[in-house]
Length: 334
Image: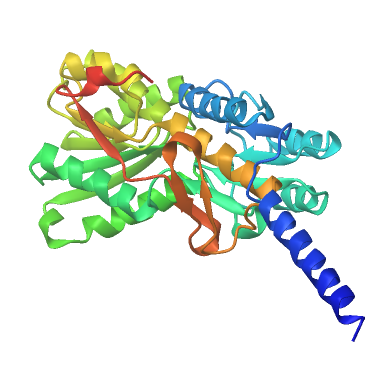
């Protein structure tokens, strides 16, 4: 009988330790080492995206850095992944140039204890724990076609000016564009070409020129890449077909402002890429701090963006795309 208080005390102590352990997981660790690896470091979109990540890291007391290649090749990111492993980074945030080519290196990183979060452009799920999707992929693809349909009165030949042929996000969006085009209201619209500018300004400019020359009945072009849409707009702005061929897609307000104001582009869409990087950094910190494991239903708070829930296959969706036009474009600066 005299031993019962001792047993109860031990049980109470154990419960107390358990509660303390749980309490620790609700706080983000300070001094986390986080690497941000964009597709390439010269792309204005990627610069804005990673700056959002750096801003989030500053808020949570993490040590973050941006590294990356100058091109968007499938293997160009490998050395940076290996460096993150060697430097014992707590987390690596990656916008993947290829869905599968990086898998062996990312798996090695995870085995070494590096938490992997992809943003913007995903790998196969086994290469990461969480994917920060800028918007629902189906919604993006369908919205692009819906917008172009309105701009062309749902008639004529159309084309797509994409980034690289193996870009995960581009190909997923294009798949949904093609699905949207199957609907009856698009029966008078025909997709005649998918061109690739390789996320290179001059290549995209040349591809846009080629589309105009090859398809005299072209009425509209969708370029779901910030490099492609700005290069395409630059070509159209000095072309006799300015205002006659509708160009839309995904671009940043700052790079597209002049083309909206001079009538080259009526409307285009995007999200705030800085918010993508910001959300990805909070997710990575939550993983590295033990707040979440990446399973479906896990929740975490991302600073000014609020609370998010992890969906199927580790996907977290930032929000729906936004349409920019002459009436609102001056309200944005990124």
